[in-house]
Image (cartoon, rainbow, N blue to C red):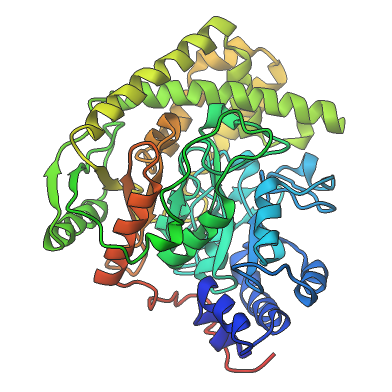
Length: 501
């Protein structure tokens, strides 16, 4: 298979070629590896190549709906037995996993071939993919810009044509943000829809979920079919869909009532390109027969963000302490930003944590009230075009202050300075729209319906009520047909060659 033939296909298309004996999993894999070797040095998307393991599996892949389809998996929550899961942290980069994550096992059972693991920020804690352990991933559309985060390595690899789809996960927008930055489809499933065990149960009370980024809606649907459903350790079952998700793509949605807003929940600036993305999408939706109304949930965005971040601080404190205990590393195994966030978590009392989590329900009720009047909420996915690499890094003076505060080991002093809260809010101003779906546990999707005047992708987000994945995929399929995007290709990575491999 020629590399240009390979990159022209999505995952469903490659699986069809294997079933019709027009190619083999090994031929497809070699094309994927060739593409990776051509492009990864420029974008730093793959941090752990697994080519020998992939070749072994491609020789005898499982028989399933995606037999022979190459995939990359994110290096967090997606353990592959025998290989480390670093979570972007130097303290974890050499510890092999003892078993597959359930979602990885399901992908392998579906016939996919995993050829490596992708770049991310430490513990997935940022909306950009830049870490001290692995360096920055870069956006194939413009190498000076971020592919987003935290699943930025996966998104960069898919946009560059290394694989048609890649594993991702989303605790605060980490599927949708990179999808928006890289011109991809990014579906965040609802709470409990996709397993995240067996090593984990419900990170951040279920706010963090597994999923994928892909180039086509049908690939996202097909991969959701392989992932969805409870595992033995799932804390609760949720209702199965009426039909396979793949059958929703191409099924005409009913006339929908959609509320939209371009106002940042934080009251911060929204770039005119992001505003245009939503307004143009609203016009497209009206042309397809849907009702579109400017409206938004009755939620205090700053209060919601603070309630989310309070639990994130505490969760990160527990995570850092657990890694230290398991590995024997001290603070040197972690980035200063991570240690500062963890210190914020340690400054909290148990009653503060419980009260904060209780308030999550108030935000969930407010979104449910909005969905009693509207089928979907439409917003920008991010507040502006993808930022340049390093743009959101702390300035050097702040890094110096952070190091001094960490050495003080006085958690309350770190909290009292307000430095962490301010820096977090500054970063979230670029991505203020995605937290809502994580905190409430509702499904949401980013679709590549806009490109800026400078040629950068800028996605829009739809948020559905609980259990609304099927409806999102029906509408996404309709929009993909009305305004196709798969033909758009990045210009800042080498074009696929016609050479056979």
